[in-house]
Length: 367
Image 1 (tube, rainbow, N blue to C red):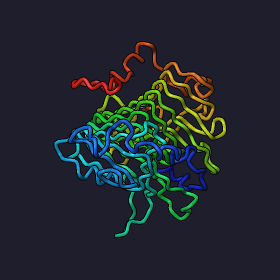
Image 2 (image 1 turned 120 degrees about the vertical axis):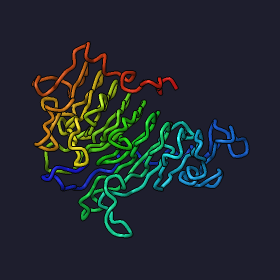
Image 3 (image 1 turned 60 degrees about the vertical axis):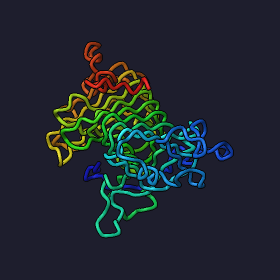
């Protein structure tokens, strides 16, 4: 997401609040945990990845490339750090990615590219091109993994395009269980393949951190029982940053939903805003949508004014922002006009079921 013109600055930033690499003890255990091994394969469509060479492949991209278009493959990743850029194209549907230890901190997929990073052939990568992992296929499931972009502003003071995406997801029916998404600006890009596609995405018991617009895009995305952490920045602007920046298409009845989540922070009280609407130049008719319900909003969020504009042309008050039954110091209603709230009847329309189930009966929380 572009920063407003007044804050194209990107000063020094803190390192990730959680370590990228997992405990050393993971290496002493069987590399693929309960999921079999190349010698005792679960089935013919399961492949194993291990940087140490004990699997079918050493990189995740190699395993994706070796899967076949009929889909339904499972890729088990041994504990380790996979420093690579990964693309799962539309031709690899119904892929399952599993962290072998069950602890997401043990298995990390990471790269260090920003929107303003120069490309070898000229130009820069842009926000989409900065993604460490790009997931374009429908029906993808990921469990027990960390996705990260560890590009840092402080280490690249001459770069002005500082969006650095950990994951961009455009597929429909994509689910993430017990995963971590680490970054600073634009960490998790929950998007769709095109304006007419209302991609559904589910994030279950995940951890997402960042500082500027770190959950953004036009997908129908439900964050269920997640932790969203705002990271302190060395900046002179107020606010320091924003959690959400939805860009929901006007025709889409469902945008972002955060339910039963926790909003935590390493920043000073009130330093961050909950959201601002993103109306991109590619879709000037966008009508951003965010509902936060039954969540605990910590002191890092500015309670008197939790929302802000990204552009004066698209004031947040004209967007689809709402809250219901939240608690915590960042949820205190001091100025009612600044905190649009749903009635009980209205809130019944904003659930994971109403957002995601659809005509195909998709229920990823039951898996």
